[in-house]
Length: 152
Ligand code: SF4
Ligand code: SF4
Image (tube, rainbow, N blue to C red; front, top):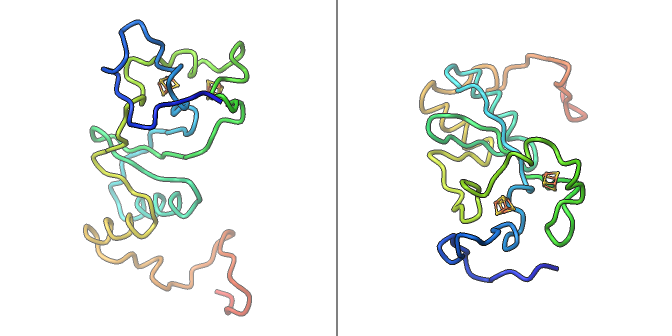
């Protein structure tokens, strides 16, 4: 296993010629983030609430752009933090450089939502309570109810 410093690493601690990946736990291989439409209407926030109801999903806003962030480790990351499919790794990995990577990232964003309740509170402050999800009996294919509740 790669031996890593126990204190927070900074680029300035390494010479310009250093390969930062040799000193990193492959932070970039432990998530993927996709830009999403900026929510502008009440129902848009309910879509984001749905994302956040899922395990390991978060949403962040950086420079005005909204992203869905999924904390999940690439299946091909090896235990020594090297790529197990280096020769055939996808373009997105090939094109990624250490220039602006998250090597010393503090994971601070303009806004960061980790739970459905957080985005709901945010939307409620702008639009008020969501009439569709506040006890409305509307049904849909995903509207699986716990046993014992009446059908919509
Ligand atoms: S590109 Fe950056 S985050 Fe990814 S392994 Fe290299 S130093 Fe770590
Ligand atoms: S394919 Fe390799 S470089 Fe790309 S995310 Fe997976 S382990 Fe990392």
